[in-house]
Amino acid sequence: MELIDRFSERRVLDEVLRDVRAGQSRVVVLHGEPGVGKSVLMDYVAERAEGCRLFRATGVESEMELPYAALHQLCVPVLNHLDRLPGPQRDALSVAFGIRSGPTPERFLTGLAVLTLFSEVAGDQPLVCLVDDLQWLDHASAQALSFVARRLGAEPVGMVLATRVVLADLSSLTGMQVKGLRAADAQALLKRLVAERWLTANAVVGFWPANATGDDIELYADEARGAPHARLHTLRQQMGGDGKRERANTALADFVAPKESGLADYVGAFAVTSGIGEADALARHIDKTDDYGRIMLKALADRLAEAFAERMHERVRRELWGYAPGERLSAEELIAESYQGIRPAPGYPAQPDHTEKGTIFKLLDAEAAAGIALTESFAMWPGAAVSGLYFSHPDSHYFGVGKVERDQVEDYAARKGWSVEEAERWLGPVLNYDPKLAQSVAA
Image: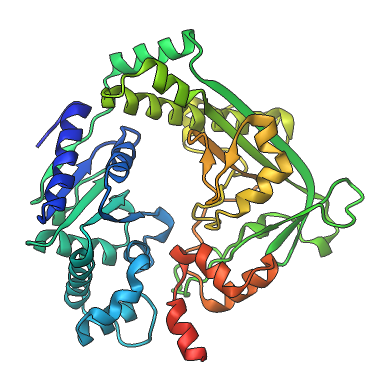
């Protein structure tokens, strides 16, 4: 069914939560063009899922060739429940997630195992599963989730799936087209928030002499390049070779000249926000019952932050760092990222460890300089904020680390000065093994 405004969309999503709390299963597929607000609606569900267990996963384009990567991301919080499954189902899911070795499990058995796992979890507490960017799920995960979505019965399980294009396996399920915020409403609100100065945009950037040492990047206080001023830690892809990959297993440290090369290289960092004043604007200008207006203001603040990050990166390339002073790109070319260099962010595929934001914020003194703070879980506040690193290497590119094995986790923990258990806690979504099982084997 096609629904135009946010009131209709929120009404359906509210019904999903109501039915799940009442012990019924519900599945809704949100579909629409990129940037129309599907993720904001997923946040809407997450914020209102009180009393429910919440599972969440997001498809990553660079992980599309990794079987069960997305499904593992979704199920990580309950891997300790695998022993509740019947033996064949437990074994199938354990092999699929790389917890144990064995022949490739049958897709039917894997799907059945996920269905049973969700049912077991929902027996303790109603379960809500949110999966964003479904179009980028690996095929095995997409098949398993489609299997589950079509076979939910009396279990208190709700699934909200967001995708740009409806997959054939999901075409029979309840669909809801998400269109962009009404242009007239968005433009009117944008003009008002600019004219009345509801929001403030702040940015801070910095650049340091740098060189790579193994999979770490040393930053120096000056060109003498003596003792490191700070150290950035990176993770390396551990994908199995399939003969089709043109690039080696990559780490962000590969885009910085090795220390032993004698070459003088540099790395930049940034933090930007367009959300200063958002909470006050919501309180003063948007009625508490006006969910449409509140969603629209948050969406505009998020879009402005992303646009600000793009603009600052352009200034870095042409002026502040100046490694591409002659760059002249159209808006379309900027959107297509047809420029030299990248700005990866901690917590995203190229560096899934959110704690690396701590180093960036300390280097930039971001809270004092730009009014952006980090929470204990390394989320940024205000939420309409972006932070990350600048790399200028001509061959630098975005990639996904994917799943990592225990050997790299142990090495990463040593480099960070962590215990292995702490590293496993922060890297949980990308672990290619079950930490509890690994501990029991070691014992």
